[in-house]
Image (cartoon, rainbow, N blue to C red; front, side):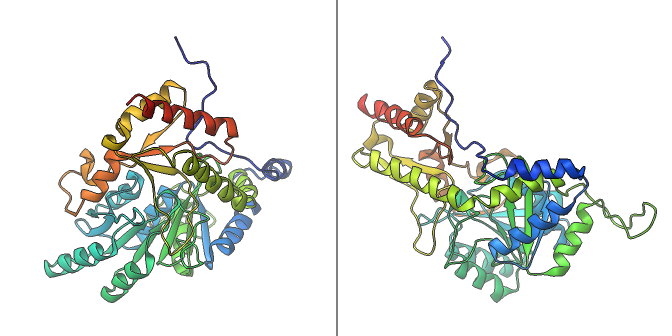
Length: 380
């Protein structure tokens, strides 16, 4: 018999007060596409928010990362060092440019790339005559990586640092926004992100030439001519004026969304404080996490059931939950890529579960999650 309880989603869109007014403004002006004044304003407002000089509004975070890879002028067989604990969208653009990812394990403290292991990987690749062309650093689940030692390793060897901050908008590292430290940063406004434009992304940088070139490539690489002329390969990657209007409204409520998601995490923390075998993703001491998703580790011996049993029990109550990212070095599509470490990411995947974390969750939604998890524990 189908479950008739309302669905509790992992992370659903949450509109604020200004989005509809701004979209209506775009419709009233008939400036739907291409580009438009909301795109220009969104880029300026977003750059100001994250602390970079420039930004380019694009169709997705993946598009932003692809243009960052293209800027590096990668050649077939070039290597790019990436974390293994991430979503495949981080890695795919490396292959779009016919380069090869090399994976590095994460650390327990933040679940992000381990700085010491990155340094070891870089030095090893250089000794083997395989100097990496870039490092992609991902800030997962709303938690900044430990950027300073990673940036120092990159600077010491003259390797560009690209930051994938798709999951970390609103987080901080030493008071600054992740994504603002490297050559460029990537953000996502997919439907499950902390703010959304339904689909969309942003490439940010302090390098004016990089952003200018990204905008050129993203508009089919059209040359400045009265006719359609193209001297380079281009892409259809720019954001529409309508979606940018939504993004402007969403950006205005970002702080509220962060507070709500952090509050959700605290509800779960208090509720499961006396449940054996449950631990939470740490909040690293160098900054503030957004808790984009509240992530647990479930010790099957202490808890009495494994992560998958809990996930299925939640699904039976029409509650969406999801395992922590499956490491990239275990993905069939990346078989054969070299990996440094991997055991930490494998353990986090085996035991990790992401709970409903949306900023629009109601107390009764959170209570349903808590009751369902505790019901599994009581079966022991």
